[in-house]
Length: 282
Image (cartoon, rainbow, N blue to C red):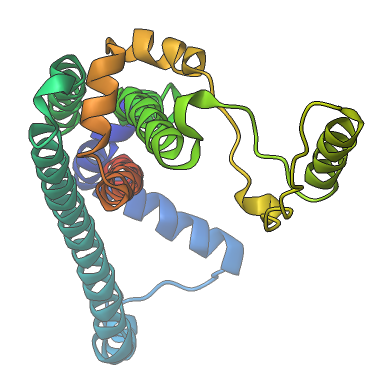
């Protein structure tokens, strides 16, 4: 059926040209039969032609010409806009991929395995773009079969793991008490501990201890708590990192860099959807 529709614009004009005389004769006989025409034009229809010619040349022909000119113009303009949209999407994708490639190259040396993994995703996605831009591609398969399941999902997964490792390491190094000590007691817990210490010191006969003043209360939102290094073992195994590599690289990975990378991945996803939609209707 698809091949029939593709060749229909070529076969119909040829068929109409070949059957014009027969079609015109059948149409004329049909009109005469329906109108109950009981007279015959002795001049061969010259008088009728002279009457209808001004109407055809003055109204019908210009109207049809304007109609088809408008249709052709709209069709050409639509096709041009789609080509421009495809070109714009490709340029945006190329720029974002160049930005992601630069970001990957700037990662610390300790993340060499992660860098190689991210480069593989970028190379695979570049091959996908080249393949989707070739002529004769069946776009329907890409639109409805795994259209959103591509290499950038894997890139995003690695970036998420790296971001969690970095943020968790920085948080532990800055917020956790030295040596992973127990949480600081505040409020009623501190008062209770001081009261118990004072009671035991007064009952002792060997020495007398001065009760220290209670420490200032720390807001609950800022109370540090210990985080075990075992929480990072799964992420380290998935990224191929050692604890030393994770600690060293976390100092060079900033939040703005991750933010720019996430924005680039979002633009890549949007532009790919726009490009495939334009290809589907081209």
